[in-house]
Amino acid sequence: SQQGEEDPQALSIQEGENATMNCSYKTSINNLQWYRQNSGRGLVHLILIRSNEREKHSGRLRVTLDTSKKSSSLLITASRAADTASYFCATGDNFNKFYFGSGTKLNVKP
Amino acid sequence: NAGVTQTPKFQVLKTGQSMTLQCAQDMNHNSMYWYRQDPGMGLRLIYYSASEGTTDKGEVPNGYNVSRLNKREFSLRLESAAPSQTSVYFCASTFGTRSRETQYFGPGTRLLVL
Image (cartoon, rainbow over all chains, first blue to last red; front, side):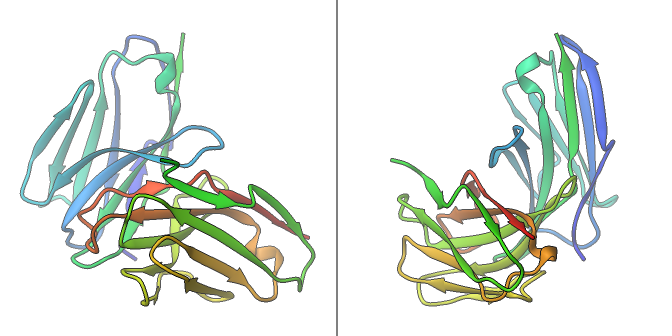
């Protein structure tokens, strides 16, 4: 399976701290995406990084991609209580399919 | 513009019953997907439709059938429900037909099979 794996499975931090979560995957990819899922809701797209990119920023989000290590990291800076959610990485193959990891559950305490 | 909508929101079935989960998108997207999410796990692809008139199997297609009724609608059918199909089902769509696109998700259907 090409499915990614996030690490850690759960993360609890104080508001204002930075949160870092990692994703590893198994096969070659076209791109890697990060999604957020609030409890009981559908997934919302956060950011996409292509296989030829190494780093990408969007607001308080910073994503890195290391294709030699088959890994990516998502950094959320200055976290807020509203960032409490599960975060998933998804890898896209060279066709139509997406493969999701098992997620990191982030809890930001006020 | 409602995005991706799913019906029903919640359903309880007995083993052996059948049902159809409905999904519709109003964003003129070409590709549509059905996933299942089991507790504490990521999403697993059941079926997808790259364009109107085509459907393909994903990682876990057994026990399911799909119909791409038109460009807007993509339904998922359970012919004979089993307790192992208890899950949350998400429909998603993308504008293009390639996995470099952003996926837009519906709110999910929670299915309990007794």
